[in-house]
Length: 420
Image 1 (spheres, rainbow, N blue to C red):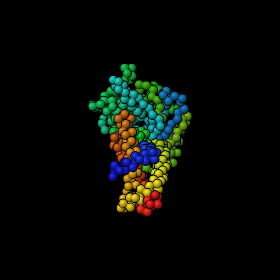
Image 2: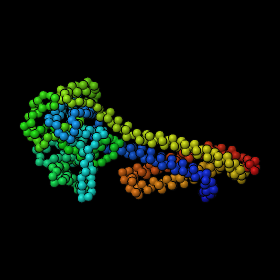
Image 3: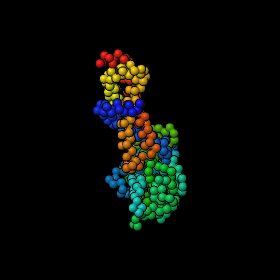
Image 4: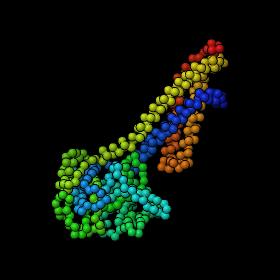
């Protein structure tokens, strides 16, 4: 039976060539869309590394033209602002960070390990950041006030960074690779994961550096820009720190606009020359997810339109084949073939055409793992997407071929004589 169907398909190879091409292109587009959806579903199930519920982010604009240049008194202003916010009823914890979760800003550093480069995303945070974001330390510890007296800088990394920088050995307590003129940094803690970009961001290497916002150089006045002098004595520090861009707050559940207004009033009282904007991390998360899902939505729309066109084309081609093959079908019925056998033949013929197209498509997609182009895509996601796409294409051809094959069952043996 299969040999007979292949022979029939070969005899109509010109008519089937366009159908095969349409099915092939549709299969490849469908695979891309399904892969994106499966990949996002896979990412959403991975550990996020932090808690976004009941967390607010205060974006701070200091008016400086260069964020990398420390401003005199800026770090002390942040320290005082944090103390003012913590004293508010409804705020359970507050921390400063240079880059906030779900923020588009990114800081990346690269380490050269004997010709092997390891890129690590970096954020500079204060000691309370772990409490605000609910970060769980797996090994070692988080930053603490005693780190200010160290002759080296403490850092906290995630497991991916630890494995990338020190493969096969414990990274806890190890100094980071550096140039001789750079200050020394040591790993004091390891967290499981931290995907700053959110649930749909790819996991990768991440590192936290400590920012001690209130530790100004000895003898410096603790004065806020545009504000009044603070009452906290200066703490010796090795260098003037730069001010973070964000203040992250852990608030009580159900906190509303009243708390937002009180926070803004306190911050403006500390630094009148600065501007502040409060955004809930929940809203930032929704915006990030919509942005990342936009390519999937566009691809799904294109794929649906293409599949619709292919489906209509298949119905038309099969209907034309049934009309032109009235004599052949009538002879089969005269030879004793039942209506179900005729319907099965028509369905199997289009499945043979679909199989040829899918085999070519699978051969093309198989080059991705061989060429290393899918190294960021887990094999399980690739295989699942491939299976789903194949099954979907077979279901599409079955749906498109059902009506023409059903109409073929009404061809009577007398139709063969009339065609003659």
